[in-house]
Length: 383
Image (cartoon, rainbow, N blue to C red; front, top):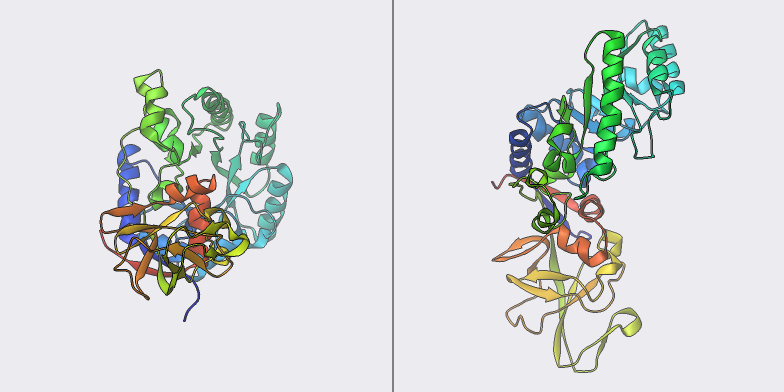
């Protein structure tokens, strides 16, 4: 048999989620973030679907990701958020580099001069993320220095929120104020407006003032809100203005597996490594062909559930490298080779990446990238 789970990716859900974003941001350009293989959904197929829907830009982390998209015939503008190593790739593949320091800008300028070709760049400003970008008191001077470099054209400015998903938005407000101050000063100096973007998925939902010239959503495209328990968070806000907007998102990924074996065992039988689960009754134990090598975290041991015949079956014992055990005692109709849903809906029951994230004390992003990138993907259009 083929190893591990299957990730069923619904491309029509991706399109639906894009339309939802466009309604929220009043048809501003959307820079679709497809880094990390589109959060585990498959960057090539997802990007092709986004192209059909008229996407304005794509954004990736590194030039290697952009190269895969170009090789697949994807010609939309691609912003490379982090990479600085392969300078020639930006020219050969017609990519848009994000500049976080003057050294990278100078390297690009020198290469552009050799080719006698102007390269358009976006400048990143560190407004409080503390990761990448120009920062300190000399940001304005550094940007002006870059703007004067031969063959460099500053097309855009960007930054990144560190906590736009929190009910207390005071720091996000500070970040936006810092960003706006720089972009206004630069626009006055060079006497033209600069294409500016800072809003991630959380800001798309909760921070309309940050939408600016374009938005840069990631997780929303794949059907998830970056804000946990939005209704609970909304109740804690003092201002009605700051309540998150009602959203209509469809999770695009379903993770499926098959029941490999069913074993009948007596009461008192230990299951898996370390005997962390011992049956308290005569039990039916199912064995799934999925484990932590497939992205199904060991943290799900004795915590998570899966769906079998439309019912929830608990994980019992420790998740192994290749196998995971479930308790089927209360699902008498279950049979070997039955379909098992790890993430998704079966009958009236549903398990989401958010639910699994809560079990593992992490975020849905990690669940999707871990399982999606290690599963065999198939593509459908269900909605």
